[in-house]
Structure formats: structure tokens, C-alpha cells
Amino acid sequence: MTLTEKDSQYLWHPYTQHKTSQTPIAISRGEGALLWDENNKEYIDAIASWWVNPFGHSNKFIADAIYKQLTTLEHVLFGGFTHEPAIKVAEKLMEILPKNQQKIFFSDNGSTAVEVAIKVALQYFFNKNEKRTTIIAFENAFHGDTFAAMAASGISFYTQAFQGMFIDVVRIPVPVKGNEEASFEALKNVIEKHNCAGFIFEPLVQGAAGMVMYEPEALAKLIEICKEHNVLTIADEVMTGFGKTGKTFAMDYVDANPDMICLSKALTGGTIPMAITTFTQEVFDAFYDDDINKALFHGHTFTANPTGCAAALASIDLLQTNEMQANIARINKSHLEFQKKIENHSKVITARTLGVIFAVEIKSDSEESYYGSMRTKLYNFFIDKGVVLRPVGNIVYILPPYIMTNEQLQKVYKTIEEAIEMV
Ligand SMILES: *Cc1c(COP(=O)(O)O)cnc(C)c1O
Image (cartoon, rainbow, N blue to C red):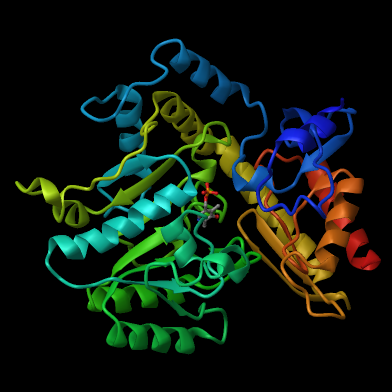
């Protein structure tokens, strides 16, 4: 049996209708921005394997750090124990996070980072004997697939089977250009009508919605409104963190600081699943008490796994090199040139760029759904050409590893141009 045949016998894949989907591609090797399948066909990974891999596949520097840690202390429980890799990650993050972030809590993935933030927002008010149980989120947000994260997510597709089983979430419009005032008004309205504990948002770019972008000034204003009403703000930087937007964090563009930040995806350079939620001292202090019931009773078996911490440290070191910063700037410049080239194409609705993130919306005759027919046609075309891109409906986006070469980038652009002609 081939790998694909064995796969279909045993495995259940994410976001997959197994009856109608195509068989998955068995990847056997990766290096830099490239992947090879079991038949040795080469693919350019133009979405950094779901946004996790900025420094390339099989990165030797991170692999060495992981090996060294695995042969020193691979894991130890974090309840009642601590270790140097976790402390070093905390120290490192304190250097690069917005200055008001003072405490860090480890978990396993983006959803758990969000889950922790939402639970903390709710318990913060519980601990203060204040009845606040509503969470505010953007329309079309994506915050993950565990229950609270899913409740905050606005892409109905992912959540429709569970309607009525969620914590209270009220949605406001995203302040995209021209829609800022409506978003501000909606937020004020929601805060007035509900007992709001927290506002969670993807800062500047909504990834899963199709790289929807909005301005830092608008986000600063929304945060300011929340602060006036003592509503906790949660920046979900799971996608945007660690250089994707051109700065270390998307919040670095924003003239206001959130109370909590969620990190994962690129945190370990795409090697080991790990996540972090960070907090202000003020949030932490609401749990600091003689009363044990005020503690945060949340944890995961692999909390602060030392090997994951070693991978995170190596990744942040790589991110901070001049070489990597130059790569980010190079890709941004290249995207802007490509955007200029195609944005006036008759089949293009709009194109946008922030940092290494590029997205283009393609005109379509019919209403395009998230996993609609245009999406399938585009996806298959890209795979056939050896480029890994996962369009969202009629939106094609690129989120390359920072080490992608100019030649590889040009191939990705050319393939997208051909796809636009094809559909
Ligand atoms: C991917 C993502 C998540 C969920 O992360 P998982 O590791 O898939 O659980 C949460 N928030 C944002 C913004 C994301 O992009």
C-alpha cells in the first residue's frame, strides 16, 4: 500500500470532508521554503505550512537547540517546578513585547492561548465580584477551535453545529477603511447594553477571514473605548506575531496596549506545538490572593515543555538577526511591486500587503463560499504547479517563510497570475 492508501484507511484530517475531498499529498522531506512528496515532486511552501514556519523547513539552528535540550532535560512538570528554558523565554519576551506585558502563561496551541485569555477575562471579574460575562469579538474573526475560542470565532462554517452552546459573545464590525465609525459606535453600544468582560481581536490582519486588513489608528481607538469602560482587551497575535506584519508584533504599530496577548504558530519556528498568553501585572494581581479559589485553575500536561522553550528561544534569536529582518523587508518590497502590477487587472477586485502578508481578491461570477468551487479550482491549479497556497474562497494569499528566495517568490507570483487568467 502507498502512504496515501494507508492514510485513507486510518486517518481523519482537519477541516476535511473525507467523502468528497481529494487524497492528501504525502510529504517526505522539507528544506528551506521547499517540500518534496513521496514521488519526489517539489512544492514551494508559500503559506509557511499554515503560518508557522518563518525560518524554513528542517532548520538546522533550531534543530540543534532542540537536540541539545532533549538530551539535557526533555520535559518536567511545571506545577511546583520550573526550569531555565521557561525563564529565558519569559526574559526574552519581556524584551520584545509591549512594555505593559509582565506575566506569561504557557499552553500548547493557538486555541488554548485564546482559551486561557478568555477564561482569565471572565475570572478577573468573578474574582472582583463584578458580574461581567460577555466577550466582544469581530465579525468573521478566527480564534481557534476549542469551545471558548470557537465561540469568539465568527466564521459560521466552523461553528454552526454548536450554536446555542457557547459563552456569550457579541460581535462588532471590523473597522476596515470607511467602516471605522460604524465599528466604534457598535463597540460603545455593546458595552452599554451588555456586561462586557473582554474584547478579543486579531490585530490589523484577520488571517482566516482571508487576510482582511485594517488600520492601527482604528484599533487604538477601539482599545481606548474598552479602557474607558474597564473592558479587558485581548490581542490574538497567534498569526500576526514574530515578524509577519513587518514588525515583531502587529501591536507594535498600535498606539495603545492590550491587557493580554496570545502567541503561538511561529513561536517555535514551526517545530514544536507551544503557545503563550501574556498579561499585565494588573490582570495577574486580580488572581493573587490568600484565597486559593481566586487562582487560575488551568493547566496542560505539557505546560512550558523545556524542548518547546528551547525551540522558541532559538526561533526568536533567528528572528532578531539582521539577515532575517532584511529578508522580511525584502519580501515586503517584492509583494508591494507585485501588488502594483496586478491590482488593476480586470479580474482583480483588490490586492493588499502588510509585512510578508499579501492577498488578492479575484472577481467571480457566482457568490463564492469559503470552500466553494473557485477555491477548489484555484487550489488544484496551484498544487499542480508545485505551489502550496490555500485560497479562502476567491481570496488568494501568500505568507511565505522569510527565507524564501526572490526566484521562488517570482514563481509564486507568476503562478498566481496564471491562475487569475485561468479562472
Ligand atoms: C491559527 C489561529 C488560532 C488557533 O491556533 P491553533 O494552534 O490552530 O489552535 C487562533 N487565533 C488565530 C488568530 C489564528 O490564526
